[in-house]
Image (cartoon, rainbow, N blue to C red):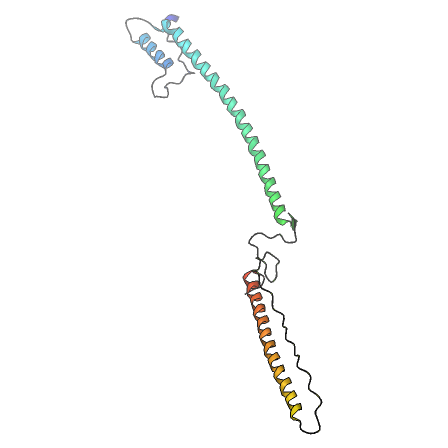
Length: 205
């Protein structure tokens, strides 16, 4: 009577494969069920028992291999998680170091407020200035009155004495005019100095 019973279904095997077709183990079981219950020409369940057992063994082996690979993946994920934590700590350390560096007032040979390439000086904050263009030196005045001093005034009119005064007055006039020219030249140099100081950023416009 036992030979006429339908074998136990392969419950550990998938019913369909990845293509949507019946798996081999279930296909054999359904075929044997048909032969046992409906096919009049014979009984194939007992004949195919070994084939079903081999299929189940193959499925079991594949499942065990998959379990091993899952365990390997779990270990890899744990290692990645540790590395991520290490990287996060390193990033935080770098951020802290950067904050400390930005707060420094003495570093790389700089004292006080550290300025960068574009941090120009202003009326309230020290900073960088551009190099001023070269400017020619102002010319020293060489004016010298060499005319002799006028003599003491005589008691009566003297044409010679009057001429002395005229000559001294004319000499002084010429010297004064030269001094004015020299002064204006000095003013020009001073104005150029101011203009170039503004251009270089050393003076506000």
